[in-house]
Length: 180
Image 1: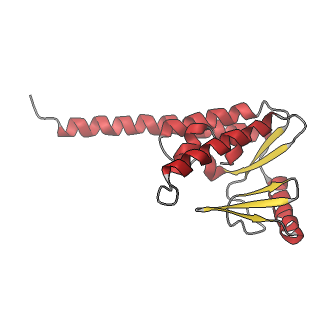
Image 2 (image 1 turned 60 degrees about the vertical axis):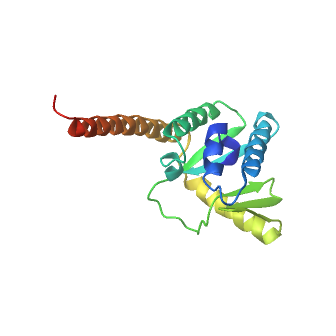
Image 3 (image 1 turned 180 degrees about the vertical axis):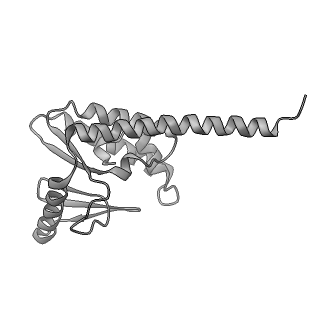
């Protein structure tokens, strides 16, 4: 899930999943930084394009409720005129290797996210390489209503998962209940 689109709760869950790499104060500052950067989304003179894999829309960090909130917030982003979100098609052939999440900023800088931080690339070859990779994935990605359908399907599956989990807990409670 791109950092600029993360809710506070979801960002806390992701950043909190690596506690041995970041002290709690660093985790707090990272979340605040994410949220401050989201203000850029409100600038109508800027245009944002986000590619999200379907897996990122189906697997979550932290509490299920944080992910539900995240997906609902993501649906709200579709109302923004300066933001476009596409979803990498599931099961499709990837023409180039994707080693992890990356961000191309104004065709001047590439940020490659790693489990322990990020790598910043400024060289023209790196920028062209990542821009070409993004464009190739973008051209083949699901768009608009198809992305909304994937998100809504993920929300439905989360509701069904919760119902199943409750049913299984109820059955386990019944199995362990003592006869009266």
